[in-house]
Image (spheres, rainbow, N blue to C red):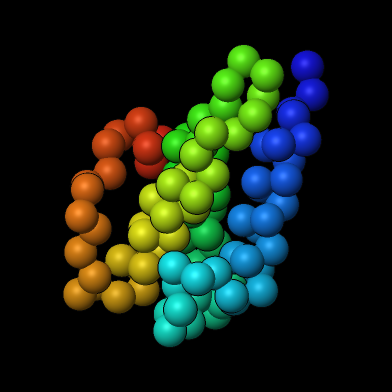
Length: 97
């Protein structure tokens, strides 16, 4: 089974904003310097995105923006330890597969 166009589009969009430094939830956070220097932080962001995203039986993404927020909140806290995530991560959200 192939990934749906809906998921592919959600992943592509998220990847673009993460790679370009323009994700709206990370405004004012200089996270681009982490690429190449602290790749495990970026790896964790994408793992959270993949773990949180949900699709229906047709493969249509149901919560892309929520998955983005959860993932970018991790990075926001990683870069700014004064930022407090309103809902702590559950183990399944941060698990690396």
